Structure formats: C-alpha cells, structure tokens
Image (cartoon, rainbow, N blue to C red; front, side, top):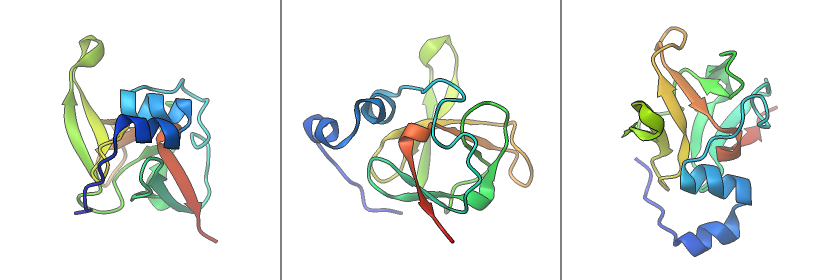
Length: 132
C-alpha cells in the first residue's frame, strides 16, 4: 500500500493544469475521444498525474470503444481505491489514486476477461511512462 500524500488545494492548483485540477480534484470527466491516451498503444506504465504513483500497465489496456483509456486491472493490489459515487442521478464506482486520493475515472463490470472489469480512466488523470 502506498504512503498517503496530502497537499492543500492551493498546492494542487499550483501544480496541476486547469484541466488536470478539474478532473483530479473536482471529479470532472473529459469529453470522450479527446484525451491524450484514449487511442494510445504505446508500451509503458500509466502513472497518476497528481502524484506519480504507478497505476496501470499498458499490457492491461484494451479498446473499449468508449473514447477513454480503459484497463482490465490495476498494476497491483492497493494502487487504486474504488468508492461509491452517487452523483449525476446514478450509482457508479469511482476510482481514485490510493496514494493521493485524486479522481481517476470509474469502474464498470463490462470489461474483458480475465477480470470482467473496465477501469475507464480520464487521460488528464494519467501520465504515460513509455517503455522501449
């Protein structure tokens, strides 16, 4: 389990772009098919844009057809946390970074084997560390 990272909202606003702040700290969602990683097939590790924690390996990324980068499992147990989200008149599973608590996206039960899960993330919440 990663050590928790705590910052003030002023620190987050200074360190993140306005779009990153809206997504990571205000639970925003970028429009489908607009983020940097929705159609990326580059090998590597996707890290939290807020704190740098390694969250997903590119080998678990798949084409969901939704317009957001989607993964069938996190890199390791305890890297992300799943919370109940009752906003927008529906109940969903919000995915947040376990280290800094930043909003990453949502989890849905319609992913591919072996997990059947779709971790539907915002590109603004991620940074790809490329692997050659």
